[in-house]
Length: 337
Image (cartoon, one colour):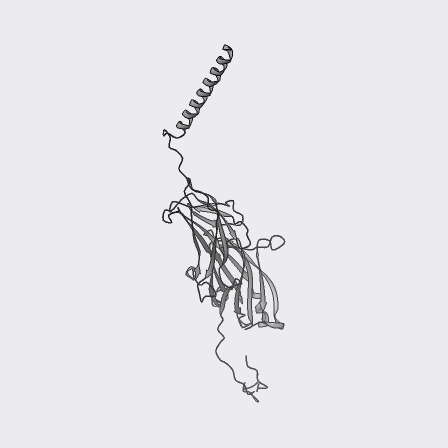
């Protein structure tokens, strides 16, 4: 938009044009998706905050059907919705325009759609921000929260959806969050024979006992509200628990395999990022916790049908018979006197 000091209303030629320089190219709208969790490693049951950063577009007031729509789709998580009131069931969006002391914070609400394929979507109409182009080209940050429900979260955000003259798609971006795992391998004393049926309890760094859901034999998924507190090794001697964030964990054996003693040693695990990484861009950027534990086999009991305790039984009977004999002999001797 260029303003001149004055111009000839008959010819349209400026009488006194201002000296100004302009960028004749339209500013390209950008969009960036991010999460508050800086390392991008989360845990099932954790509520995460997501951000979408862009710029409010300039749309001429002469255009028809001026609109500014925010669309978002998430997998592996469920949006946090308003519990009650006029906006019950909708997602609250905190929208910040500009930055610093002059920033303006507004609240919008997005309508949730369950797509039936394990994903949810929200749609929010931000068209009121276009009024008089008061916020045009200013930064915009949209924040909302979602509850992690799976071992991986995928999130796609898009600004604009072609409802304005078929041309208001301002861009999109994708964000992933990941979870880590722990794997314990149970061996016999020889360190090579793997043992199934060993049970373990798992604790976080604050010594809270973790709960799980059983996914398959020897594989469990973290669930803060789960019913499983003891996880068991499968035929290859391993037990894996998934859905955990970076941190220190411990496992303690609570059930020994049949014929083996219980190993009471506490084993430590750590989930962390690979060296040089400050955030996970894929599962390969995560070092999962791995450890092993051995058991000592119990002494074998006598087999059925063997000599076992028989010899002791016979010896006892002989002693009892001898004692009885001595008793009666002593009594007879006494009677003869």
